[in-house]
Length: 187
Image 1 (cartoon, rainbow, N blue to C red):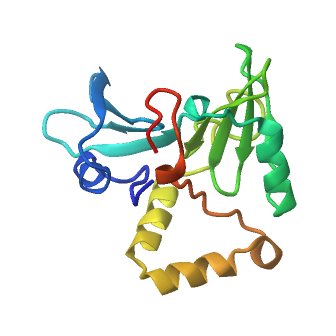
Image 2 (cartoon, rainbow, N blue to C red):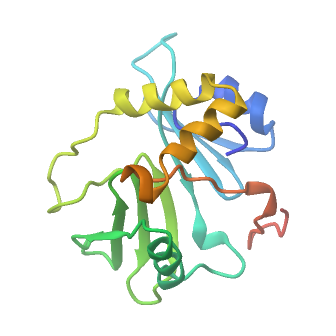
């Protein structure tokens, strides 16, 4: 999101996305920042310890028009990256995951509208409550490696990981500047 990801510090996010956010402390050592469609969360152990990134979420339910899961699923299927539906959450939502890219998609069970996309996913493929097979450190290290590459190297890395060539999942890129929200109408 504008160069920020789940491993960015609060100061780095401010430098990249600016100071147009709402911030709240959601519990001891927990910080949540909202930039219209995008939310980022961090945690820390105490006092002056460094903030650790937890996740980045796109609040898709704020999009105008809404995004139907069938449209998203069809588009991903067409390019070779199907969504995997996992156990329902029991509170009116369906859960999908792209295990290879660790992106979770939460969908309203009744309307079929995408509510949010989260990376890294807070749920894994398999039965509810099953421990996640993903290491937070492994994902953070991969993102930091990519962020340290120059544009030509990142492009070459992405080309090597096209579905037909590698079997790995795609990078998720959301062009925040082109999205319109129901709350502000800003792009």
